Image (cartoon, rainbow, N blue to C red; front, side, top):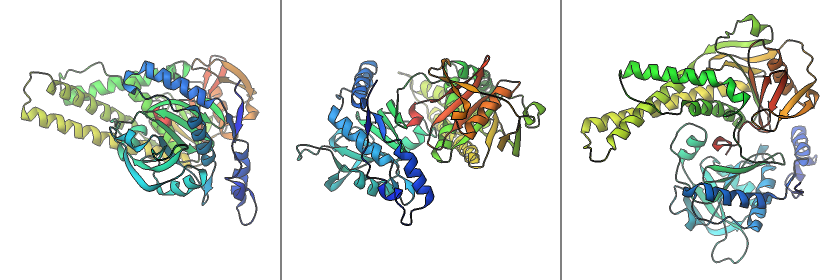
Length: 467
């Protein structure tokens, strides 16, 4: 078992004192004090995963893994910075661990300071409010005129394309440098990535390694099999109605469906207040007695925009992809009308994806109301502000350690009210159901009844959207 490392206790000392500091800030500082411990084997793990990624992904580049002392310094500094509070707001930032010259063949545009700044928590706290962490990264490296140490040489701007890609609002990733990117966008949490590939993460002092997501394999994925099939049927119907006889096939609709689930959950997480989403089969209506006997939906409102937006976005993308592939065939002259048709479809794809993004953001904001969002597995909104009203005795839950749902049991009393409501809902429904719980600290959990046991998956995914 790896030992634990404790960060220095400087950042929030002022927040923990009295002297005009609000009770909420003192409470948060005290709560975070317990999160200052994290595994000290992170450098070894990152180096191992870096080498593994080099072997498995030839396009990853040939850059060697950062040295252990560099990884340790980066982890210590950014982890402590993640615990800081500036003007009652938590610090959010990302850093690229590379020298400016390493970014030349990428879409990361460096802006160099006239003189390097110290790579230290106080400096990061000053810089963070001026940077959009989804678009601009702190540049950390070892300037050639300095023999030792890490310094902030400036910032690297990547524009809006990366933000859209990692949040699902676009599908064209920018060119990444072959460098380590560390995200500190939640308290006591770090994400380490190479390109857009997540190597590992620290969540509340616990090391989380990437694995097959429970959304792609196991009982949780099985729940979403029917809507994934329905999505493919809807897309085929839309394309046939618009372009009868148009040939298309071999497209991965399952991944596109799952990406919308992830986008919704991460948008709720990005708001910082947490929330819950209760998912029921599509045939269940808001007024169904089997549902209303379990939950009271304070704000009943039906909307099908996410499903329509997803089907429209994917169908336009499929048509554009096929047109573009046909136009790109070697020794085939490109006619002007073919070019116009291809570019027109490209524009329609992006327009429909913007509509989908707006729908996802709209539903995600509803999580700000007390209570849960209720929706079907085809993303039809049934309402929000839902509260569990049934009474059920539920002593224990299985905490899964793999996508298949195998794990150890815990008492439900160890969890908060939001989690207990999700447990009771999934254990009570006479139909299959899934509950997602997004904690205020950023964790995303999923709950489902599997045979006679209630199962909770603690980390739904650590994929691209987790960056």
